[in-house]
Image (tube, rainbow, N blue to C red; front, side, top):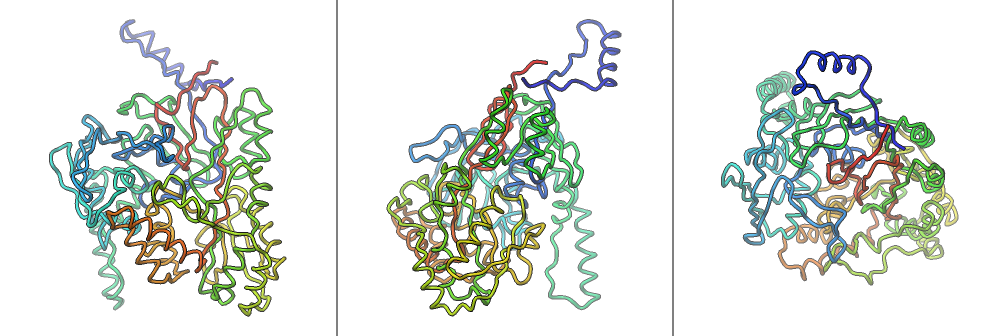
Length: 555
């Protein structure tokens, strides 16, 4: 049974002393809520929600910030996608395929005490912060670049207008990069940021490097807010220690009610065995990323529970199409055909998950093709393609970050043998971070593709499309016009029949080009102490809001 953590002795003594000198009606009531400790494999890389949106980031930022519209992952629609429910917006209505009006929740406060209003929504989605050509957060354009403008219709009412019809705007507003930030928290650093820009310009002028891009004043604010975030969510930032923990206290003024825990600390514990040992000893209350073979260990204890969910995310292998050994697409096609995904799923996931039949999920509704063949296992065809490609047997590097993705190392070892069987040789190169993964000479590496919302614009568009980092920043793939044009049609078409046709054609191009191949959707398993009523979601969010976290335990 979960033991609630008590006040430290100095704090308890102080509370007793105050109680002795105050009238009964003013006696300080002890806060008996527990302090929750969550052991994670990796800490977030930062807490500005649109800058950092990887798996290790969103599980933390999700409880700091709110979106206008929420997705209730516990309630599914007919196609299997989460139900959309009010967040910072109490209601919304479609005016036309390009226009959405939202009524905002009144009385909401940011963690610094500032009032949430329409001005914060306008700033969050402003061209200078997120959606413009020269926005301070460039990757915001991939998520929300179709927004043309946000209009203020009152202190608590806004209208969002998109450049082209946007049939999934509601889902966008419930998803990544759409967390609402405080305008005042940014503008607090405006003068400091402008001084930094002036200094940078002077330095560039002195060096004669006039062509270098001038930084935006918001970069200073982003830097300052990365580890001092200001949101409206159930938990507010307290402190952090690099390589150790990041800690939060309850936002007791939260509009959904008081959070169940008095504080939450995310503690980095890279080793699975150490996380499990800490859960067993009571040092940790929740732990993440338990591999399937360790689930029975957790279930063996009466006071522990294992909670598993198949994630709306596919583990993939990325091929650098410009690498000398991989530039012939027949090599990439061969490597995909040589992977026995059923064997991977049985060996690593106990046969409890699946490989998507193409970069799609049933929750795409009308756009989903259940009859699509998807990724085949055909080693003989793989050998033939490899021979035709002229591959000479050279050894190619496969870079990966140990422990970042569950079972990623084990998958790499199995795939190495599968590729060896068709005559392709790789060397497994462990590195520390994605900067090292994608450094000069990168050839092959594991990645994950999150289906951020139930539409191709929320998945393959963001991961592989013309605005995606694979093409623009890392330059690992120069996609054919048929793919990129199709992606932009998906973004701006208001005709679902046209979108379905275009989407399936772009999948054909993607699978022919094979810049990467899907392996399977992973299972995310959490170890949770009994007495904690908490539901994991099909994304990596850890929702600690009062409606998803309840603690019923005694000392």
